[in-house]
Length: 343
Length: 250
Image (cartoon, rainbow over all chains, first blue to last red; front, side, top):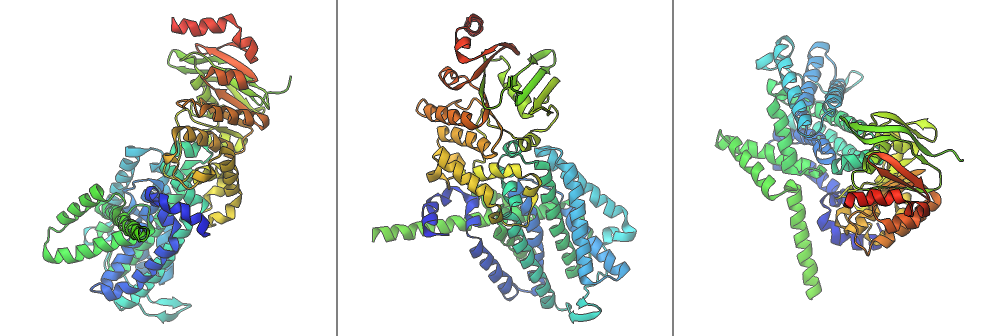
């Protein structure tokens, strides 16, 4: 961008919350890289670092719907859980390799999201939300009923974590948490960059238009249903991948993966991190996972504190943690500009 | 007589027993500014909603360029070359003025707008249309501001500009001056007058000075039906029009 273009834009950043993140994608991408590299060194264990990035992936998927399209979906657990089950079952029963398992999870998440989306977007607002809630409940009871496959209440045990292999040759073993983290980190970076690309595309810009004013988007020629369904599919595919990685991390698929609280957890992370910000997804997932880890050691009722944190963010930080950081950055920039002017 | 660009045949929109639009036959010739006026409750906006696809007509047909579009949804009419503005300003409030126009231009891309992998730079055409329109609307200096921060008058102008971005063959404008201050009205009048030179425009309007100065044809509606139709001069002098308007006041 030429200086001429950026100069007048600076003043109105204040009013265009979302435009800022889109204007400085390079800086946030760099920050994302830094976090991904530093994470295993900073947090207590590599396993915890894995968990953060896995949930950050699911949050990216949720953000595409909530932050960019304005769709509050409680269906995310369906995609997360089905990704976990499909990958785990394929590895256990068909002995498929790592990448096949992950691809199957992506396909399962995407396909289910396509179906859930196509049904749910037939209604708007609260009725849309209720449909996603109802479908998640259904998915949960299906998983519960098919206990021969899913293990029911006990969960699906002995999920393997196959090595990175190519044509029968093991290239990279994933047994240690740090080795697994490197796989998760590479996938997370790819998903993040992919999400950035999707948001910067014609499709992504239209999602924002739908979020802003769906009637107008339809009036200027967009069939908004197609856009919402595609957003759902992409979201579900990413969430399915996250579910599969989570199963490999735990060597286990708990029934709770496909339960409503999983949807809630992903949504809370999205809102706390900041809707409509990709880096916010990482912040949200990181904050909740770390808080959960620290607080659960101190107090078994730590979820209560999480509720307080959510209330605080919703009441005082409309843009989530990312929005809060931005406001802080602007205030500092404003102060420094002022001192410059005074001098 | 030239074939009309838009034609309605016996168009009716009924809400229960009440017929908001009652057997309207409208013929809009290409290249003209055609205005629909009438007292409050005459059915102008209901007619407009049938034409844009917001409401489905209860009976009758709508033909655009000889093609039956009665059952086509609103978004599907844009691709054929129809674009509309809203009576109550309907913008993408938090997006920049330029982005509002660019999105409106991109709306004609159909399936191609679903491409989620190519960057926006590859769609330069739409950005160019937006920039062109910014110049034309005299909004270039405000291009980066969120649309919601514009003055009401400028929002009305942007509203019409977004409809123009689709490069439509027919522009449907629903009370473009509604709620505008007297200072902004001349700008809007000039804009619509300019549009009339290379577009076909269907206008619904209350402001009589605009209607009389820019329309080629005026249709006067009353109680869901067409009262009379003709050039401004003959409409102005028609006794029935006065009665319809005065009847409302009395």
